[in-house]
Every structure is written in structure tokens, then in C-alpha cells.
Length: 261
Image (tube, rainbow, N blue to C red; front, side, top):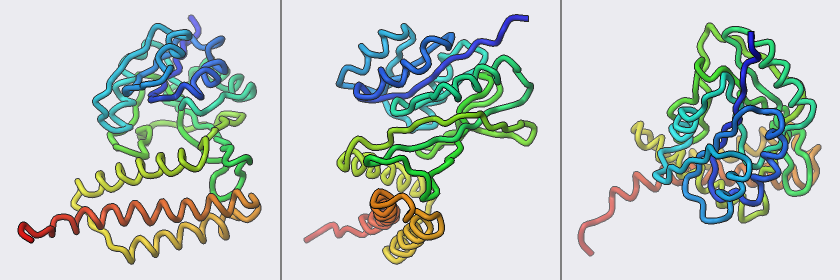
């Protein structure tokens, strides 16, 4: 029986800064690389094509879940390993992935611990580590759900989830502006998703959830052990939490706009 094949799949946009370093950690040992771009204006396409001819574009952004589903439709290999351009596969994780694919256990999907580098430090507390994420599974077994943001792999009761050895290194934010832009995008998508479900919010909800977020990250999850970066990340996460609830509240208030002055 032949060894199962494995593909790496990514959805990207303007990832020229990270993409080459990401793909260099996998290109020598995977069978296929699939990159779905959502309209990059930098050198992302040229970098991707230097590693693979399976480069596709879907600039009509449908949300994270549907975009991943589309990318997976281009995968021909037996297994798919999902990466983001700002992630790197460590040697230990690589060996664990190869072993898992070779074993080819039925109805089994795999998660990995993700270690994030944020503002000059690896964050090992704040609830950010081990940050286990489902990233490897048989291509025909499952896929990502339809969520516009914070999408997840669909897991049925019959599936077994195993943890791979090694860390997936995550270079989360380039700088403060990158954090704010990324955070605003997530907040917008979260508010849109909740609005479609008929959900509403309030300023008081935003304040309470933001406060809860800070206390959980900095105190309960020992973010103070991550030094100044832990404090900053806890404050920024609380701010982002408030913004997404405020965004949802503003949407309902906008409906009250008068027709005349």
C-alpha cells in the first residue's frame, strides 16, 4: 500500500512578508501546496508560485470558513495540513505530522500546540499557550465550517482527535498598527455574523465583557508572568472585546437615524 499523500493549504492576502519563510518549513516534505489568495497587491503571488503552480484567486471574500472550503476543493492529496502565512512548522512538529500521515489511522484528525511570538516575546500564559488548533485531517473526512470569522474544523462524534508533538510557531503581529487593523477586521466580521442572527448588544455588555477578558488573561491565566507584553496583550484584548460589542450596538443604533434634519 502506498504512503498517503499530504498537502499544505493556505488562504492569504498581502502576505509577502511571511509567506516565503512559512513555505520553506514544509515544501521539501509535502506532496502538494495549495494557496488561495483573496486579492493581494504585493508580491504574494510571485512568492507562492516559486513554490507551487496551484495558486488560485478568489477576491470576492465570502468569510474565513467559506474561503477555506474553497481552498480545500483544490486539494488532491489524501491529507491536508492547514497553515497561515505567519506560522512556521518546527522540526519536531514536522516529524510528528509525517508519522501521523504514515500511520493513517481511520477517522482521526490532529491538533497541534501553537506558540505565539508577540511584541518581542513568546507568550506562554494569558491563555495563549498551548493554544491547540485542529490543522491536520484526511481531506475527504471533514472541512471547515461556514463561520465568517473564528472558523473551526467540523468534528463529529465518530472522530478521534489526537495531539501532535512539537509547536507551531506563530508570528502574530508585525507591529501595533497590524494588531489594530487585524483586530478591527475580526470585530467587524464578528458583529456582522451576530447581526445576521438577530443578536443585539449594549455599551454595558461591552464594558463587562472587556473587563472579564482582562481579568481572565492577566490574572486567572497568569498573563503577568509574560511581563510587559502580557500586560499589553491583556489590555489590547480587552479593548478588542469592547470594540466588537460596541460595533454590534452601533449597528442597531444606526437603524434609528432620522429621515429629516
